[in-house]
Amino acid sequence: MPTTCHNPDRHYTVLVFGVAGAVGAGATVYPLPGTGTAAEAAAELKIPVARTGTIRNLYVKMITAPAGAVVDTITVRKGAADQTLEATVTAAATTGNDTAHSFAVVAGNEISVKYVSGGGSTAANVIVSMEMD
Figure: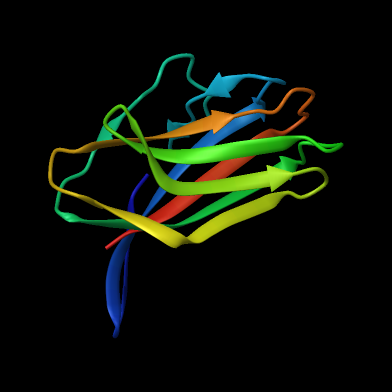
């Protein structure tokens, strides 16, 4: 669900993806665009971007943490390729982010989010957001 934001210094759009319910230990899922009211997608769902810009500032929040020493990895994809914009959430943590990486898109590029759950993960109810400016 894109939301356009504006401040005097910057104009950007927030893109949101989500997974309602448990992710599943050791699973790879593709969160759906929106606020997480739908279950995770079994197949990757890509959304086209409407303009040229830069995707940056990835943030992840979940209600239930992965648990133990488990690491869950959330990666933004362009087309069929993983990008360097990636966050990890480990053990009892419920948040992760990547503000160091970004990638360029042009109108018509398709983006998606890939969630790789570590073995034994108990993560659930995940929201992923990023900016496009």
